Length: 233
Image 1 (spheres, rainbow, N blue to C red):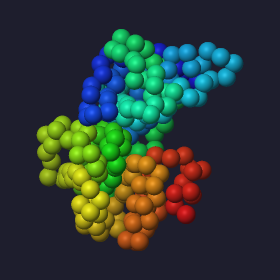
Image 2 (cartoon, rainbow, N blue to C red; image 1 turned 90 degrees about the vertical axis):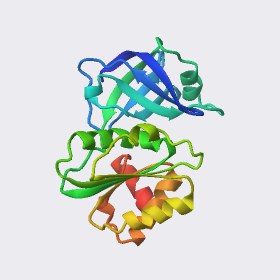
Image 3 (cartoon, rainbow, N blue to C red; image 1 turned 135 degrees about the vertical axis):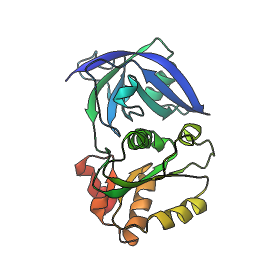
Image 4 (cartoon, rainbow, N blue to C red; image 1 turned 90 degrees about the horizontal axis):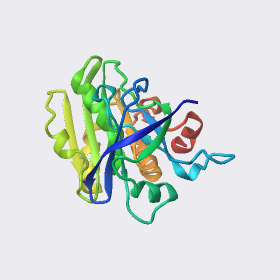
């Protein structure tokens, strides 16, 4: 397994308690939109066995052509060991990258793609939206729906600047508004539905979509295949 020791070049405060960490991109490190990678704190692998408490898998919120790697995450107490160490890092410090995964890439099959995210889960969706703006091939329309009860919608100002007749973006501040929008956009039984959020959020939305006769094969999660049955049962 290849590990990359990379430097943090910038830390951006997206909202209260939410930060984006920008990292150097190694020359041979590449990925697809919607991919994730493992972020390890320095020293996590120095013992006889890796310290898994110092590692998290994070969605990459940039595209390879940005020539930088970025991830966005909540950073506020109570801290896990990983978040405790992450919150103390500054530009110039280093972390370790390894093991890329890709389950949420754009399916270009002449269908509508619907991106449904909760809070910071929109970090997974940002590169999909940016990739779509660059190339709409094989996608009928792209719809993004994000719910965040705090009202501090991550990336909203940036995404509001993206204009394309085939792109629709919705930000909901409460469940009533969210389900009003979801009720309309889920009328498309042939679309792909990408879901990112808490476990309870995923189960609720899967149940809702299945009740709307959306087939399971059209509902995509950023989860290992062996875990999917727990969400769809």
